[in-house]
Length: 169
Ligand SMILES: [Ca+2]
Ligand SMILES: [Ca+2]
Image 1 (spheres, protein in one colour):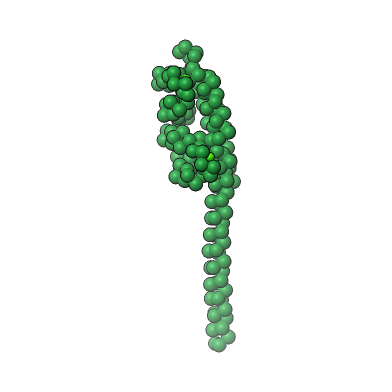
Image 2 (tube, helix red, strand yellow):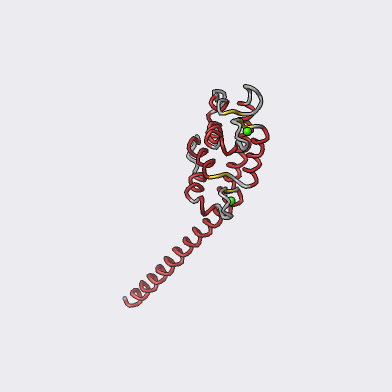
């Protein structure tokens, strides 16, 4: 359940953070973000630096018309894609690398990216992460249950033999 909350946090936080970065850095010419704008991040708070890193590392992918600037349309499209389809391995990696805290959810998703991305479109969505963590939780519970039931069996067996020896004495 905690995973569901944090996956929602990851996506909502990323979308809001990216919007904040755009407003903050688009000041040179107000025509969109250039690669140079992305290096002037003195005003960006430490917690938001991971989003700058995401933009820097995925610049060419977001700049779909290849003019060296992320226009507001291109930017909006990226944010929509994140909410609809999710994030790529490279985007998540950028968030994880400069994240202020060691986010275990991010690490887990990166380690099992191929398994989490069940529709194989190269992006993991919030739904895919939640489905994956529910399955992992079920598998864990099953394993736990098997352990408990097998140890219960040996306890009962042990008690039985104790009772037998008590009777004999
Ligand atoms: Ca562009
Ligand atoms: Ca997917």
